[in-house]
Image (cartoon, rainbow, N blue to C red; front, top):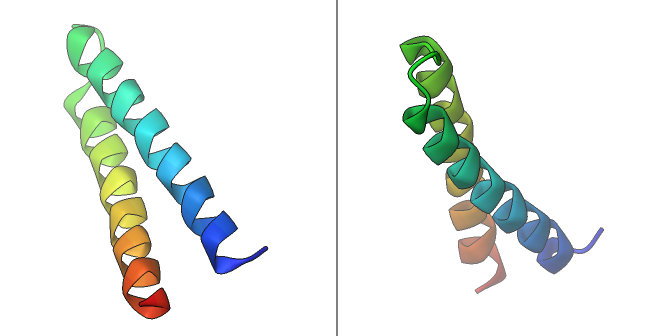
Length: 57
C-alpha cells in the first residue's frame, strides 16, 4: 500500500469515527467511557494522518 493510499484509508476511518461519535453522543444509553474510547481512536488516527502528511511533504 502506498503512503497516499494509506492516508486515504485513514481519512475514511476518521470520518467514520466522527459519524459514530455523533451517533453515540445522541444516544442516552451510551456510556461515557465508550464515547471517550471512540474519541481516543479518532485522535490516534488524526495523529497518524498528520504524521504521514508531514512525511510526504
